[in-house]
Structures are given as structure tokens and as C-alpha cells.
Image (cartoon, rainbow, N blue to C red; front, side):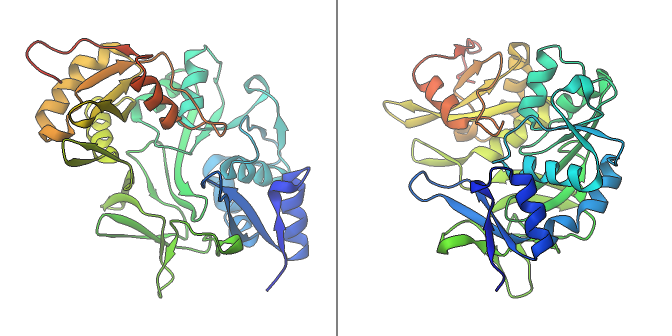
Length: 339
């Protein structure tokens, strides 16, 4: 087995990946895990490099490009973007004003749009979470071009499109849906976890792998509903957060985050957090029409922006804590209804 290069300890992670590729070493990349048992994903450098020509074509990145990657290199999506840019000869820049391309999460894209950031002429590649059609449309209305992809640290690229409603399997990737779970076979898969760590990655005898994300595949379009383990236990019922968010987001085309809020009798109730208070009425109508009683949010909140993790994703733990301690703006329930 080739030696494994721990990228997290490198002073220059991008250079470390490129050097490992030259030497034929494996690379170990940190990914989400518990504080007491962090884990790393081990992969060949070829599992990244072999996808570079497709990314270059889909995103239009070449040696003339100027690429802005504001997120930390500890996040694999950002490190991949920087390694790809350096490999094709593109220039990494410090801000959007100098950029032809940017790699952002949906939350950091929203922050840029809300803060009046000028993305005119920038091709924004968005990953790390689902990109709603509303957010993509806002960016395009401001003059940006938007691409969106779905993947995971263990799987690398799975699907590419313009928003969460337009994802097609990435070149070279086979996708299957088994019992609502997304299974993938491709040359971009990782080898597993380093140091004997456990994680969600499962690989079958045919080389298909899953991390437990749920979704559907219809007429070649992949819909990702999320990781199936996020639950709100309310009055004895188990509510999958991803199912509720999918219905609400599809119904109004904008971002909604669902959290569990402590309740003295029911244990928890379902709460929904919106960025736009004006969306409360239509999204409540969608909830009443399409969700079962236990799934319907009983509490509604709004925030000017979602709290973010270091990697730029929505910090669901922080958002749930704010809701539980009354630090979010509550939206008044409709007359005669908890929803």
C-alpha cells in the first residue's frame, strides 16, 4: 500500500496534495466527525485529478481564470477547488472583485448577495449544501453565472447542474436509488477512512458506495433530500428533517431550515426558520396542504442570515440552540392554527 500523506498537518495543503500526486502517495483529508473521534477520508490523488478535465469544461476554468475560494482549506470542497485551479494554471485571488470564478456554499452565496456583493460576470460554483432555484435565480439576476454540484467527501462528485432541481450525474458517475438511498459508482470514490475510524460510507461488492444521503432519480435528474438520520422526535413521532425541508423548499423556492425545539409535553416540536418573513404565509399553506400533522412546523421563525460553520455551511446546531433559547424572531401563528 502506498504511503498516506496527512494533508491537515501541511503548511500548504494545496502544495501537499500536488506533491503527493507526484510521489504516488495516498492523501488523508479531514471530514466531519465527533470532537473526540475526528476522522479522515483516504483517497488516491487520481480520484481527484481524473475529474479535473470535466470540472474545467463544466465551469469554464482554464489558465486565464482568476478563482476566488474564500472558505478554509480544511473543507474538502475548497481544497479541491484550489488544487484544481493551481493544476490548470488558473490564478487564486483574494476577493470577488478580481475573480472570474468563485467557489461558495449556498449560505456564503446568500451572504454575498444580501451584502450587496458584486458577482457580475463571475461563474459561481456552489456546493456543500442544496442550492435552491430562488437563490440561483437571485445570483443570475445580479449578473452571475451559476453551477451547482452535489457530492460528499467520501464520494467526491456525484451530480452537476444549475440548482438543486437540475442535477444530472457527473461524467463517469453511475447513480442508483435503493430504498431511497443514493448509491454511486465512479472513479472518484475514496478508499474509506483512516486509522480504523467509523463513518457513514458503505461499499457493496459491485463497487457502489453510499453515505446514507436520500434522494430520487427520475428521467436522469437526481433530487437530493438529505441525510436520513436528522430527526425531530415529537409526541412519539419521528419526523425526518430532510422530508419536511424538501416539501417546504420545493413549495416556495426559497431556503427553509427545520429544527427541533424543546417542548414540555411533546419532547420537541418542529420549527421552521425562514430568511424572508414575507414567505411565511405561502410556506404555511404548503405545510398544511402537503405535510402530515406531525411534520407540520408548530413554530415559525425568521433570521436575517443563517449562522454558519467554519466551512460556510448552515450551522444547524447553533440555529436550534437560538430557537430553544428564544433568540430568534418568532412569526405569529395564523389564527386558529399552530402552523
